[in-house]
Length: 308
Ligand SMILES: NC(=O)c1ccc[n+]([C@@H]2O[C@H](COP(=O)([O-])OP(=O)(O)OC[C@H]3O[C@@H](n4cnc5c(N)ncnc54)[C@H](OP(=O)(O)O)[C@@H]3O)[C@@H](O)[C@H]2O)c1
Image (cartoon, rainbow, N blue to C red; front, side, top):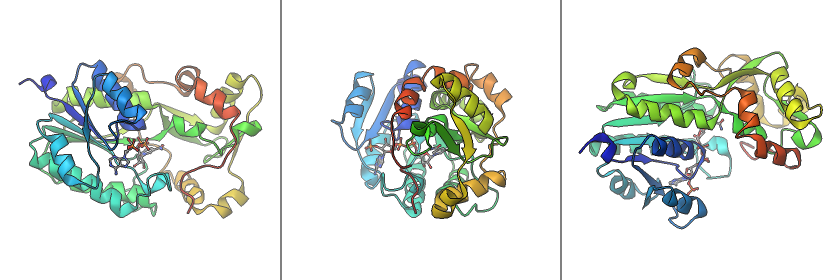
């Protein structure tokens, strides 16, 4: 059986990363299998209509993971994290357990290439941020296993900027960096294309760790691009001190940006060779981010993640 006839099992296919990876793998001609919790959710049915084979399963049920991995050529592994707050109710220990379990079952099942999605906000020493340090532990485990693997380290997603709570509905935008400070951001579509390239060239990417981003932007760049798209001024400033004083999660992320850990380490020139379509922030907003941006201009609410 050729590689392409064997499926790639994608975790989190109804979510952001897994969704982007699934789309890119399908366009590259791979068979895709997805482990989903609910076979009948709108997102699962949409995957099925696009040609994805669905397997019902849960990260808390290793037997379903074994079944889903049976006969798979490759595995894309991503886990929910405590950084997503109450969304999945996942603790750091759960994330580590899920990530290690998937990797171990991949070895057991004879999977030929494992791609583990970590984060670029990882330090050589613990960062003190639970959902970053959890990924360092999973990376270490994956690296020690007898399996061809690639670790990708995504930067913060551009899509995250359009979540409620950053001020767009009030004609401003507040984020981690100072106006002149820069940070790398990733368009999820680029993540999918890069992961599809990794699966297509395991001999090139096996054993490597790849930081992944699409663009490098300052607060001023965001201000200019948002203002241009909104047709009015969207002024940028870093989160106010009182916001940071009341939200330990945002305060810690801001501190990590200042120390360079959250600023991003991706080599954009090298990534452009892997994916010539790498999106600038401006292009992403004009294309895939456009309708979510228009919605965000009219949507109030609090930032939903990481209130602890
Ligand atoms: N936001 C960022 O900028 C950023 C940057 C780098 C890394 N990250 C990391 O990215 C990860 C999240 O990825 P994402 O944004 O793609 O997540 P997401 O969009 O929230 O999707 C999560 C996926 O996990 C599935 N899932 C949740 N619990 C499950 C369980 N018990 N069993 C099986 N599947 C389950 C969900 O399926 P259902 O449809 O069943 O709910 C969904 O498909 C986190 O580890 C985060 O730290 C985020």
